[in-house]
Amino acid sequence: MKILELSSLNVSVGSRDLIQDLNLEVNANECWGVLGGNGTGKTSLLYTIMGLRKKQSGSICVCGKDIGDYSPKSLAKVMGILFQDSHDAFPVTVMEIVMAGRYPHLKPWSMYSQEDIQVVEDILKLVEMEDMSYRYVNTLSGGERRRVAIASIIVQSPQIWLLDEPTNHLDMHYQILMLKLLKQWANKSNGSIIMVLHDVNLLTRFCTHAILIIDSKNILVGKVEDIIKRENIEVLYDHPVRQYTDNIDTLYYPE
Image (tube, rainbow, N blue to C red; front, side):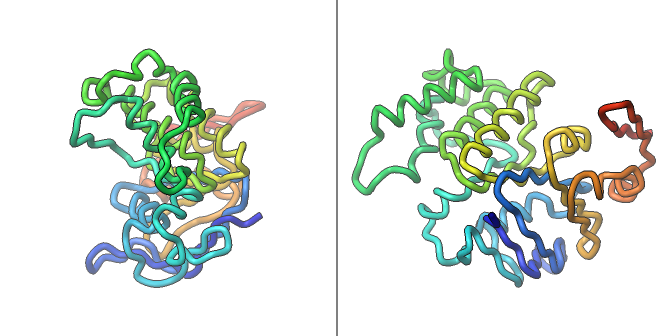
């Protein structure tokens, strides 16, 4: 089932073109990884899909409907975004931050229910933050704050998950644990993930499809096994790459 379609999408910053004529179809239970050098437009692409920045031209259809036909709250029911970094202007607790992820599901004039509270408590356990639920977020480490942000989008439970560098600030253990959790919960709702990564080996481990932004006019789109190849990675990053293959996996390392 197609849940996101981009047609002839163009994204610019000022007079600089970042994405030109991008066509993309995302179906349920797919996980797309986005790779590209610094400044190639990976974050801008996610923001444009979410409607947080204006596209230059083209169309974005979410669950068969143009993105412009959604109200902000109705859009938040089907699409959520994990930002690259979190900035907390006010001292709020972990519980309050994660509870806000339930807001799109609230009925008008209603309060959070006991069921909402239970959902949040359950997810905080999964991200191993239950003992810090009443800590202020500005007292947390970067990795702890990242797990709180991931908990927030999990309790939001959208169909389309836009994740901007979800492994930011996380050590090796939590990188794997959080990516497994995100895939698990996206699949529960027959949802799909589009996530920006910097580690090609994490992409090949967790993603079914990939988007390689080489430049604005040269964007490779397809299944991981078709486009994640050493020659494409070397062109993408303008750097020689070493490839290691055993009987199970293929890994890529910079020379």
